[in-house]
Amino acid sequence: MKTFLAVMGVFLALIGGTVVNVAWPAASKGAEAVLGHGRFQSAPDDTLEFIKEQLLANAFRDVLGKELTAMDFSATDFWQKYDAAFADSFRGTEEKFKERLATQSKAWDERIAKAEDSTQKSKLRTRKNEVISELEKALRLKKLKAHSEFENIGRAIKSFSIVKMSRATNDPQQRSITVQAKVDRPYLAQLYNRLMREQGQTVWGTLYLTTSFNLENISWAEIGGEQLETALLTTWANWGQEQWGDLVQQVSNSASVSSLEQKAALPDKIGELQGSSLWSGKPDLWLQIKLNVQQVTEDEFSKLKRVVTQGEFALLALKTGKILLSGVIGEANKNYSVQEIHDFASALATTISSSALEALKKVRTALENTSSQIHTVALEVKNPGSMANALEILNWLKSNGIRFQVGGALQKYGAGQAVLVISSTAEEKDFINLMSLLAKQVIGGHRVKYDPENPYTCEILGTR
Image (cartoon, rainbow, N blue to C red; front, side, top):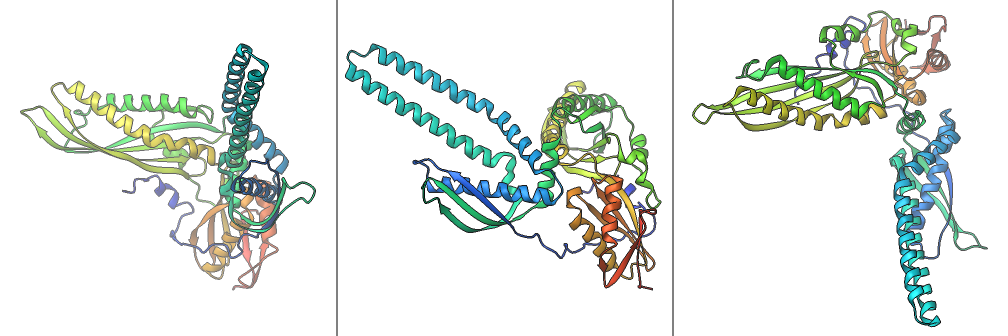
């Protein structure tokens, strides 16, 4: 895929000076295994496979609750939201089952009423109870399985081992399990943030749409020019409002590229992003769509053009410069009639629009899974001593700031200064607290000096 995210050029000069692209190692400390316990009251007809699935689901719930607490989240609030969201999602299925039960029960009652003698009535009642019982069992199995798989929660468990399985001596249907499991903390934090968002509450500001064209062997006028561009942007904006309206305040196609580039320009001073505007409000988004239109052949006799269309898109959070999503708009290779130039432009617009909308279906997931409260700051590390020391600080912040979804990159490095670009959901006070904890660590054999009064600068001591 061609690299089209030209806007990234704005951000690569975040602090100024030479940009260093570095692949840093993962944090040295791996995820610790957590002990979890689960119980399950099985039914006589439950299979061993199903019993084990439910035991593991309940043990994982215990593990994840402990991890949420360790991450300073409310496990109680999370599980209340999780269970309520599942109940809402399963309500339709449950109601259909209950309707089916009522229909079956009524049908059996009618058959029983028509029975000629008490023996036949007794047999029909027995059969009715068997049928209803089977339906109720099917609903129970379906509901328990769906609950344990809801929101793909199992993905939060990276690995596990079973320590012990047992059943109660006084009740053989009462099973229990103990597991040791490692948790994917970033995914768990992402899931927590998504579920805790109030239903119907928009978390993003305005999503701006822009498009640009790269033409080969075909003119701007031939494809419809500004009329085509306006039609596409209007169609996409209306569609986006329907698809993302509960997540964004509005979808707009009225902003110019130059005005959005100014909004997206990041500062060139250490800590300049700490202003109050960074820590409040709903950040705006910029969805860029670049389209390539190439005329491959033209048959003047049959009045046909063969045109290939394809493209790329990128979704950018304007406040932080974070790329939330990028992707390809699929290729379409088609013949178009050019008997009427208007008909050709209209058909071409339909093809481009359909291909783009198919690709943009991924945008909703990106909006749901990314916290709108991501902030970005430039952190100066004085006297790093080595690039490895600067990267060790970055890794420590990422490893210990999982609750705040800390990410970042080494943006600049020199003998006397390194600059880290840190993104996180942390409020300013939380960022300062995290940095204060860093000051208690040893980095590359050296202590770290940090002053909360100068929150976007730290110094590694003893490296000069």
